[in-house]
Image: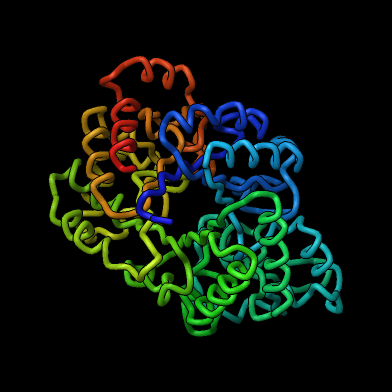
Length: 415
């Protein structure tokens, strides 16, 4: 498998097609676009506090999206069209409504107690990163049934798992095998950098994380050597690269610097950073590749840019801080709300010049704009998670000079 030839289409099933039956009907659009891999964002049952990343059952389909039978029917149709399917795997945490956590919080003697991180107070892990400080003053969240605190890196409703407990690893191997049996070809490892917590550190990119991924990879290859692992990481470019290991960890790793560099090029006229990334992107272990994109379901991060450039570009595209995210280091904006059609087309040309797997976030290929809200959402990422505009897609499909038509041409040349 040539990973550099992957054209990965990232979507929320409900936002793109309503449910899995609808997605099955819309596969012709993806085939016509030239997509050969589908990245399905969380499809599991969830209270939906965080876009489905608060999972309450890893072995089912969220009711609104259909059921397992309809999921499997969609996988069969994808296989007929030679479309691989990658699903999101949320490793760092579960919803507090997951049966594991409900059991764990019920008693200090619960058999699931050690599946999560607990404390009698908030004194431990003080230096660990609090991703959402506006939502919680501390990562330790009080739990009344046992008069104790559980640990949550992200939302308070997302309790972090204890990956030092081997039973957690075994549970996820079982989950992975469950979805492989149903036609899945790969897994996006969500927030993988945060899995291990250690005192006197930010608890990000700890060495033990890599040991876990290597073991997961070995378990996968015993089942299917063609399965793909895609890592979503935090930290520097060097940190991200480390998730390839020696070709024995993840096959694909998100390269967030590429998007930041390209927006810097087309908004500020700074092309040196993209040139450096383009030269570097080919240097990966054998059997691995960077996964590059222009936008995704999260905020557009400008952390890879120097601080002065970061401040400047954000002030240019979001002067009133309406779409601020990541403590002011990123913005929740779709491409169509930042760039004009000509700029988007040129940016895609640059993206497709890279020796890497390409990811297209649903709607980016037609230049969709931010969702409109009458009241600012609590989480600004909701601005980039609106329903797919099928009318716009139809009109662009009939226009040979549209963003969609020119993206199709680029994909065709990539084969």
